[in-house]
Image (cartoon, rainbow, N blue to C red; front, side):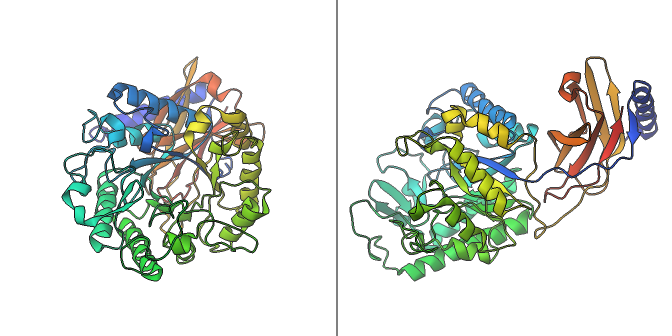
Length: 486
């Protein structure tokens, strides 16, 4: 392309003239910004909860299952997934630091492809962000599980701590924290991920039926010391990610109740602050995360674990960082809550939107319940998300606003329509294609930033009076649109 600039420019001019002759003309009309909302789902790999459906499937079968998940996410207009890439100090990607995950093809067994690289490529093709989800301190979900030869439980047995049937990597040891950070940063540097995500597992939850005490874990440390270790780990992780790739979104999904009695009237059998050494309020208030996704898996109505009361409290902890609640689609008509209807999910989404008008978002646990359409949840999601949205911008990390696309043309090919353009200014992480129906604009498709041409069935655009394309930076900043009108 760069070797024949005059020919390329001449070709673009001919195509533009052809498109005008067939009814599309460049338009200077005002195009509204693409709506912003974070719409995510967790894809859990431990115990094959969500994907793959069982260990030992062929690589082709694994890929087919993942494509089915991503296609469903795209159809429902979700725009992000949290893919669990390190469930038990193992890897769902090519790694020199840790063995292949047992949940793929068996402990230490190469599945014959790179699942994370495949997931990133296919998610981006569908306009979906891929956030790599890590469990920093869990070595084995069950001490009886077999592991690959270079698993940390074999190479550093001195760092292991047993808690019931679970084997943990002792967070009180600096070597444990250093190793977890090294693993995370290895993925950040080598893969084109959109985010780094941690869940609620730091120090272990209390063992059911046993009284908890500070000495229960057996590391000789106080709860305050443990919080200091985890605080330092979260802060170091945030700084390290931002120094390498400042546009990578960093978030944590803690237990939904910071402490029992906060806010007033809230009850819990777990004190995340004391038991888990998880001071998520501090991380949010000090800006050590780009968002927080507290696991608010309860209904709206029970006063002791009220979704609205907890959501309101979390949102008030930092007005400069968004709170995107974890919402339990998995509990629709479940054994935990047999009578919970899918309409409860819609009510929670709408309530969270009412508290976060400029940067709303929701995270659904987990994709399995959405895939099986628990309680008709897909119908509710289609109503909640009638049009596509992009994740909210992160101006505290950067902007990098793209320029207006150049040489935009729309070619009518009979049964298809081709849109083509050239980038300008700062690079675009993704492109948003918008269409006007009457006086209303809708976002129809999101494309990866490397793609500057798309051919669509004419039926896809329908009776659109105008189409437009605009760039969105890696930080979520939207550039001006280029438009064409019939």
